[in-house]
Image (cartoon, rainbow, N blue to C red):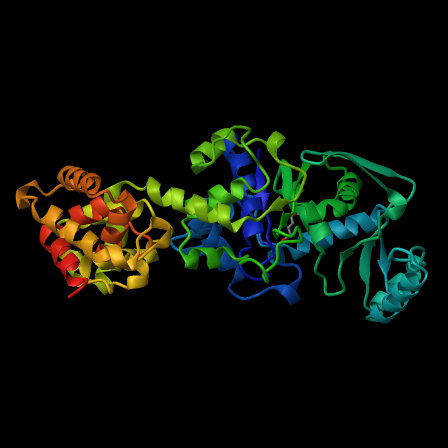
Length: 486
Ligand code: GLU
């Protein structure tokens, strides 16, 4: 199954675009066929410099690099494949040729209507509460007149002639049976007065010539599909199958918008999301495996993805879920990989970390809780500097830690931990001696362990008290305890 992703280079790579690309990539991979990247830059007014680079680099970062079309070669944008060029602005001659063929065969006509006339027409239709549609003013012009006007330099477009008496029926892989009445379909412009095709003509020509088997795209293109099927029919080409993926929505079910969520893939990358986490998240945005599995590698997605489990309903973009997945992916690193990914970062702030032979041990304690690599220096700060300990963090009503019991608690801690012999200082000895001391004191566990942890780390949230004490060592642990009331 040859599939393609066909973005317009109008800005950054959108997360919705990345999901569309991902699904297309998975389908191609499942059949070991090519996933093509084609750039649809026929709307020159909307094309943005650097956008193609962003798209190509974004896909590469996400791990779903195209096999054919516009690709990255040694870090540079290039084209590969025998069905190119894969950038539409380099294919203008082709579109012109095919538009002429449609004119010749009576499936299209030349239209000279000025923007002002079209505007007037639309306003009138609106006032009459009719759907805006071209009124076919130019449908039956005299061929000689047409030739004269073109020779005189009049501006014109080419429109498709939609058969009004036809019912266009097709089965969308996601949406099921669809049918559209011909008389509700506009005579779409195919070739603009600047010689550029519209998306509608270009996509049909390209997907045919590039041998694409399934057109996968977002639901917003569903209403245009009958036009495309009519074009395939007019050319006498077999139509590919179509699959329209559900819209991505904000939590309030409005269409995903910049105002509420970041929508650029690069934005997520810059915030520190792992490509694995974003891909995992996007895969589940409109598809479900039918099991309780939530973590998927790309390989697993290739194995398990199926169109039957792509939903029709809009998919809610839930950033909490994304962050949860991100955390899960952080825990999937082996400890040594994780430690080496954060070592420099922590070392920038705490140079001692660079030569620390116990760095992995410390890293292990935060790997369980971290969401982004850039949080590591802050999360590990108490290993390398004396934390500022605030009374309001140590005293904790929920744990029944009140200011009046603190002096006693700190004494118990100093005495108990102080009596452990330095060579026996380990998780087992620390926990068993503290538990015994807590039992003997009549205090609750939290009343002793919360202050211990808070004093050692200065933080409300951190790894557990025993683990931190063990890694800090006896000397530092006692020093911090003794310092609280000093
Ligand atoms: N160029 C179109 C877009 O960016 C592509 C739609 C399609 O995949 O056919 O929305």
